[in-house]
Figure 1 (spheres, helix red, strand yellow):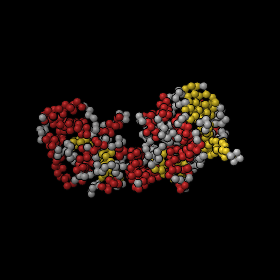
Figure 2 (figure 1 turned 30 degrees about the vertical axis):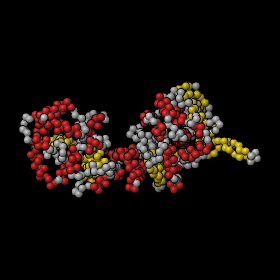
Figure 3 (figure 1 turned 45 degrees about the vertical axis):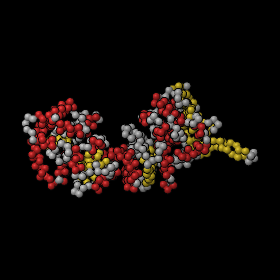
Figure 4 (figure 1 turned 120 degrees about the horizontal axis):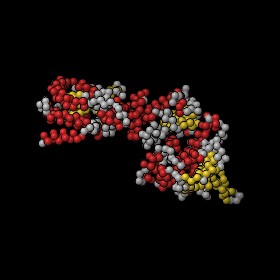
Length: 629
């Protein structure tokens, strides 16, 4: 017998499960039955498409055998099974990045976080909530040797050779005090119906049934085996036959989530292609949503045969939060992940599924705005990601996304922004480049506030990249106030002031030339601004150039060799500082030179860009302060 220790992470996880996470201990049975169902799915698939397994007998079933007196429960399946290496890999480690996240998400009061169970594939380990000893006997399909894995969940595990007549896995649970409540046939039957009724394989419960003996006039125990699930693919049944509870319980079963989903969309397509889809939107965003190795949430079936649950080709990446099932009548059973990438049938299903999900969300946004805001609170950011790559659905995505604004509290849609546009306003404006608090106080917004023009606050770090490629919403232009071209719009909208502006710019030319000469190769140009009202200066970029903050972000991501386009400094001709500078001597004035750099540096600071030489900035500031006191 080989005695082995759990990995450190597993020890921590088991300790938390056993001692803290008891709010929903009944989920142990759901998890173990789901594992058995997966094992049966895998073997069925192999017997259909792999010549090495076509001679392996496949009699799919899951058996629960209860011994009320001994307080034990056995869960058996005739699935793919495991060999010694699999037992060590699957039951001695948790080979998923989610484990660390699971542990890090638990607070000091772990009990209130118990809804995290199931969200990280805890699966088998949840059985230690109700058992103080677990024995696993498994034989892998195509192999003769079986193996026994035994553990108390505290002191590692033992592995030794064993025997099993057919391939599959048997799990024997020795209930602890908390688990003894489940040594009850009625309770087990209810849990199966609640969580696993849809499992496509028959689940049988063997137990001692009380039977009244009329001759002896007493109740006797008769060992009975009964099927306790419907064993039908719920998603293939007509929607009219299904209740909300049916949908919710299926969702919990296939995802391990303890909370109800926000929405679900059930579609059966018939015609040139036949397929069924059932998609769910979780009420809370998956915790791996922004990890590169996120867990795929959609399972692929072909003619009710499970094919895979880790194919990222089923839906675009920005919809990675969607959970559910795609069941096709037209894909081959031996479809591989490589074939999926170029398969026309799947491409058609994927295209239709994306449109279905987005159109359903649009309907909810129109008819149930309060419910839709719950969705937006979790998934607004992933929808924005879709703008970058899903050109076919860009208009629909723009309609679904919600924005912060200078005009309203909370979030708003672009259609609402259009309805509020001023008479004669040609564009919808937005600002990017940092935290919301920084953007709302940006000098770039001053003229828009003065003219009562709404500006959208885009404070997600990738907003500049995403929206740089979008120049229209319907027939309305979308423009960044960070770009120099937005100032041209303001000139057009202030045509009556055009002559006055040109006169100011002409009188300001000597100072502009002086400032540009002083700043040298740090700026592309220095010019009079039409967008400033209260601040003396601001930084803008040309239309096709990334902002200074975007350049910083790209370098932080490892792109060290990106070009560094120079910014343009705009100064406010109506500001007192500028007027005083204009009145100073034009040559050899050290104070004007200090002021030029301070105007530039403060504009950088307002953009959230750190200064290259803070010490020199402080020295200049001290000189100006000293002269002014």
